[in-house]
Image (cartoon, rainbow, N blue to C red; front, side, top):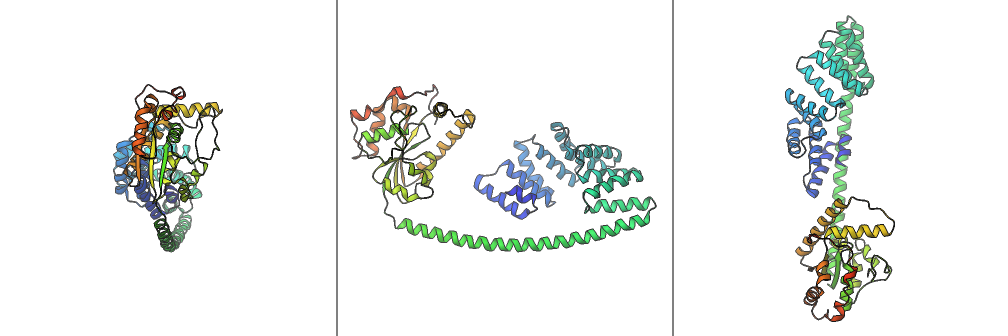
Length: 436
């Protein structure tokens, strides 16, 4: 969104958007690049360099970074650094037209017009439609005294960008020196008229931006009032709800949640299931799921149907568990390598292909699992037990004892409970230590 706003020239809006993104997701190199782009468009090149230096520490070879560094160095007349940054862009991409333009401007400002002309020609050959290349070529040829050769690239520039005032003024100067004062007067008059139109357009644009900003501010104020009213309504509704106790079984998919549901049932805990997902080759003993739980984000009061029972809630849905209820959460932990292997085996049996590379998927799921468990441990509405699936299969007695301690008077350990565990169904095993 910030990039779209930036491309539309909505600099204040882009700045606010990227600041909100930073508050939500933390500072990132991409956010710093957007901030630098905003600063460059505001001609705040010192501010741009501050953001770019932070990015350079982590992404020193990034082409957009080097290009923006070159542009800011050039604006600050740090020509040697601008030349070096443009050179790094061309080392990575020898056909980068913008880098040739930066080098042409450096050469022109350094008084090396012949080199500037050659570089501008390179840029035009790579990107004919960029008016800046034609302008720099015309300026370089004028500096070399090649007046008749300077006129065509300046006219090309104006054909591409009629409002390029510097090009029109430079063309007027060329025409006067060529002894064509009448043509020069025409260009100067067009330059004056264009400048006036640009000023009027800018004034209108600024007025429109102020009006739009005022409208957005009013809209945000109304939205804030509506959100506050909704929050007050929800708080009142929550306050009127009698807190209930719910047992939740959760974990990553394929981490042993179905086995835990079987243990709880064998120990005397009622389960909330609907039987829609029947046993198959991947779960020979069944899934023990309640399909309606997927609607929790839209209808959190559904969880009240699980009062006094145990219900399986996939880990991604846990943040949707509503207050003021109290939750006893049994979170199944299994090495993520085994989890992913099991997920891939399930997909293979269904004739489906994974949508992600295995290592990446394992990293993402491990990160998600750690975050969820930290949040559960920190909640004053949650009593958490992390149960290791490999340990449950290897030594059911210790996990069963933990369940009895977690659910005193409700869960009854017995030989029948232990018999639920069938080691032969533990089919995806890793030799690595548990890291979930």
